[in-house]
Length: 88
Image (cartoon, rainbow, N blue to C red; front, side):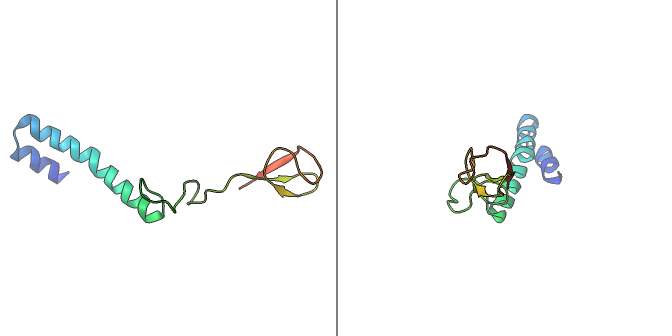
């Protein structure tokens, strides 16, 4: 905030205001991007760190309520039941 006030005092009126607004918009984006890169996410050239919850890019798996089998998809491959709960 002190930097934006200083810029408004140094630069003429419309340019100081534009510079202050640019700082209030760009600086939080920069901090967010740096924090995401530190956690393993981020934008652009990070092929290894996938999205999802804490970098886990696995699909949703289900657990059959009838036979307790863990699987992906619609119906249980073991017993054919469609009763399931999500397992993250």
